[in-house]
Each structure stands twice: as structure tokens, then as C-alpha cells.
Length: 467
Image 1 (tube, helix red, strand yellow):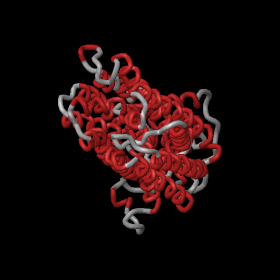
Image 2 (tube, helix red, strand yellow):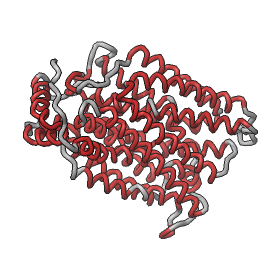
Image 3 (cartoon, helix red, strand yellow):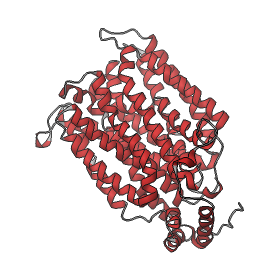
Image 4 (tube, helix red, strand yellow):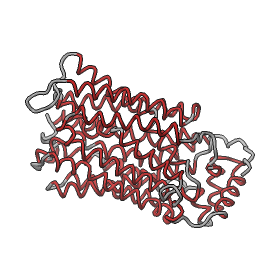
């Protein structure tokens, strides 16, 4: 298809589209906040409900099962009710989960409310990148798509910071704060204000132009695109309309192909999503407080180290935003995979070679503790400028228009299933040996490097209609 002649955007268009994308990315913030806020509550949760390692692992990872469910139906919800309608549904579920988790009276009740929050996370994980990709001009799409990951890591950091502050104010996560509730319950209540803000934002931003054209609302799409692309809006609407006329209403059978039942491009998205989790990144954000305590740090120090890791994640995501449209998606993935292999391999060797204490945990002595901290933050650094943001950018742009919502739903569902497998198995792997756990994550990082080399194509600078 021929490229459309580009006309300069109207004055203030860049600032306007950044604000629109940022409002949508609040879903990413809640995604990060909801999944990380559990970090500071793991030990208190186990103590309050007398849960063993298996029960605790399932409670922590129950949200991830909900995320897989939410991601699976998010595409159809977004196609039927609009991207904004799906955001509003997610906002309500985030609010219910925050209140319900805080007031839970048993481990199973708590797990149910976390499941509800997980559904919201799954919806947000699909809708936000699709929406941002559909409203963003091609020359800004990589950077604006990275806003989703920036919002996720900011959410993770603020959740960890809130955990640290609440635990410090109460003396521990089990200490009592306001209204007679322990600090760990307030950790979940702290999610409610941003959830309400997300719902408000979904009423203030414009609907996706591609969704509007698909629904026969071309005039509304034109008005939205004029705000973003100026005089090029008319030609862009026609280009969208043409691609939609050549396609039919999306259905699951569209994803089928000769390669083991799926189209090759769908397989690439699915495997990218799986590797993003199989490298073990969320072990750092779900269990790092428990992990650092297990190797000899105090609860307060462990929470502070975890918050520092969150800062590292934010800084590296900003690096990705600056680089993704300049250097492309593929080089960042390759560099990130190589760095993760080095960092994870160092962690596997450090934990695996250290002597163990009476509880069976590695006893890091002298420089081993420092080496483990440096390697862990190097790992987060390498993930943060590559696989964290770039996978979401690719998932938002790599699929053809007619497949985007459904294919993104499938890829995101696989991502959450992989996340669940990693998170649910970590407590048992920790008992078997941290060297083994990080050895497995090192192997996944190496495979991710080989996969990108063989199968991932560059998408920098292309319009969505060219995919």
C-alpha cells in the first residue's frame, strides 16, 4: 500500500497526544501497582492466615490467573464496547479488588479479590497498548507506546514505596495503623484512589479513531485525528476505512495459520510475551522483600532495597523511551537479553555457591551480598530498557488492524499464564535452592536472545496500516 503524504501536525498536537496517551497509561500504572503491592504483604499475609508456602504462592499468584482471564476477553470487550468502555470496566474492578483484598477474612477470600484485581490488570494490559498505538502518530508511536511500561514501573515503584512507608509507620507490615487495620491491609486500600482516577480519565479522553471508523463513526474519528495529525486527518481516515473494507469483523479463526495452528506473526507475539515473564522479572517485584530477608537482610532493609530496585526500573524505562524510536525495537531486545544472561548467571552462581544457614537459605558473606545486589539491579536495568517496554510496543503495533485486539489478547493471556507459572513456582524453587531458580531464568534469557535473532522483525517508523 502506498504511503500517505505527511502534513505537519497542528500546534500543540504533541503535548495533546502525550496527555491522551498518559491518561490511558494510568491503566498501566494500576497494572504495576496492583501486581507489586503484594510484595510488602507476603510475610504478613502468610502469618495472618497461617498459610504455608504453597498457599502463599497461590494467593500471591491468584491475581495472575485473573489477569489471563481478563486479557483473554479484553480484545472482544474492546471491539464491542470500545477501548474506553473496556477501561471503565477495568477501573471498577480495580476499585473492588483494592477494598475487598484489604478487608479479606481468609486466605481464600483474599485470593478471590486478588483474582478480581487480576481481571482488571488483564483488561488494562491489552487495552492500553492497543489504544495508544491507535491514537499515536507513527513517528511518536514507539515512545508513546513505552509510556505503558513507564506507567507500569512507576506503579511498581510507588506500590513498593507505599509498602515501605506503611510498614515503617506501623513498625512492621503486621503493625496496626488507622481504623485498627494492620499496615498490610492499608497497602491494598492505597490502590483505590488511582483506580478512581483511571475511571475518570476514561470519560475525558477521545475514543480510538480506528474503533470509531470500524463502527461507522467517521466524523468523530476525523475530529480526533485533526487534533493529532492536522490536515493529514482526512487521508488517514480514508486509509483506515480502506483497510477495514478489505477485512471482515475479527474472529478467533483469523488467528489460525499453518504454523502449529496460528499465524506466524501471532506466534511471534505469543513467544515474546512468554519470554518477557519466563526470565523471572516478577520474582523481583513480588518476592524480593522475602528474598532479601532470606539471605540475611532485615525487613526494613529488604523493603528499602526493593524500593531502590523500583527506581532503577523507572530510570531504565526512560532510557528505552529515548532510544526505541531512534535505534529500533530489535536492537534493544538483543542487548537486553545479553545483559540479562550475564546478570542472572551471576545471581545463579552467587546463590548456588554460597553456604546455607539452618533454614536452608544462602548465607551471603562479605562481598557476596554486594555482588548479588549489583547483579539484581543490573538484571532490572537490562530488562527495563528492553524487554519491559519494547514487548508492549511490539504487541501494540506488530499485528494487522483486523487482528490487533484479538492477537494482543491472546499474547497477553499467555504472558499472564507464564507470569503465574513463574510466581507460583518460586516459593517451592526457593526451598529447593535459589541457585536452581536463577539458573532456570538464565536459560530463559539465553533462549530469548536466540528467538529475537531468528524471528523478530523491526517495526520502527511504519504506520499500523502497513503491518
